[in-house]
Amino acid sequence: MVVSAKMIEFPSNGQTTPGYLAMPDDGGKHPAIVAIQEWWGLAPHIKDVVERFAREGFITLAPDLYHGLVAEEPDEARKLAMGLDRNRAVFEIVAAVQYLKAMDAVQPKKIGVVGWCMGGGLSLSTAASSRDVGAAVAFYGRPLEASDTAKLVSPVLGLYAESDQSIPPKAVRAFEQELKAHNITHEVHIYPGAQHAFFNETRPHIYHAEAARDAWARTLEWFRKYLV
Image (cartoon, rainbow, N blue to C red; front, side):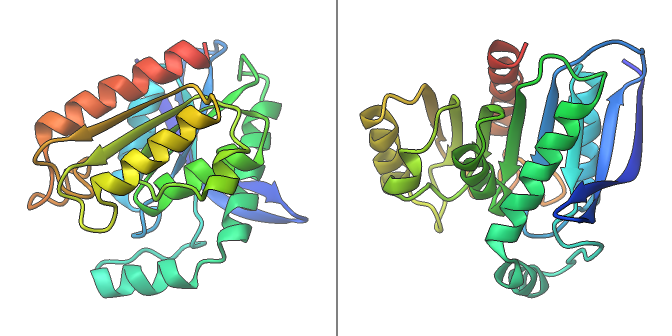
């Protein structure tokens, strides 16, 4: 599918937030997704994934939560992530949801959210904050606190790694139990032998091709099930 992609500015709390928007170039109606960056920022990898979603038939917007900054080294990324106001970030993601919802080409009006690493946690937080989220996917995102898990209403797909040092399987299973306790529609997968950030092919030392392919297929299936 041919797609068009460009940087845009969308309204957010009386100001604007930059973002990368990609959409099928067919003039038709399509479901929509907000894609949320890793701690590196709105890097080329995230833009590529946005375009991949568009080729699969989803209008997709990745808000630039660092407003133009992109990290090249882990220490720099860590500083940017630590300096991010998470409440403001969630507000900007919700503003991206509202922007997509208002587009004539977006149909239906329930918007998906998906994120990786830092963005995975923000995806969950956004789903707990907005009733306009129709489905959420978290790639190795930090699980919500129990009080926030209780606020979820949209279906949640969690994609995690067995060898993740920052989010161990024990924490993931505890989150899964909370989802069950609150009757949240969910699926949680922990990939054997995979590490944190297994989906990012630009990091060859941790990229796990088999897990990445399976997680991508599950993500598309999830959104097609709950957004279309």
